[in-house]
Image (cartoon, rainbow, N blue to C red; front, side, top):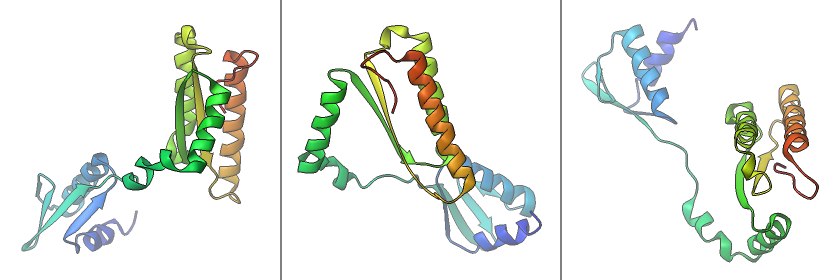
Length: 168
């Protein structure tokens, strides 16, 4: 990136820099050290006569909103519908935005591998995968959706039985 030093110096104008993961923090600290010669210790960079703190601030959910969701009549109704469909089986629920950075394909492949290596769990566990569409007009995302739908079909074809599909 031709302006990498300018970008790093721009970021170092802040007192606090946050990233989603500790790996991103580590990479940033390494880049600042390598590109600018900035010393750092325990997430603190020495920038001139200032200290710039760098840390991870993982994105989370609104706990209060979701912890009480089971009391919501719509949620209860949906849960009843799901329970009627899956019965007493264990349920794995995966909810994400449909995006190639979310590892959705890898989750499906891991579930496929799990069932291949542990066939005793067939008909005992169901994966409900909700991938909320995003960037619906972008070809790469349309291709991702087709790829996911194909993978779900293949997994269901390989492991499913009449009356039980494992992924949807």
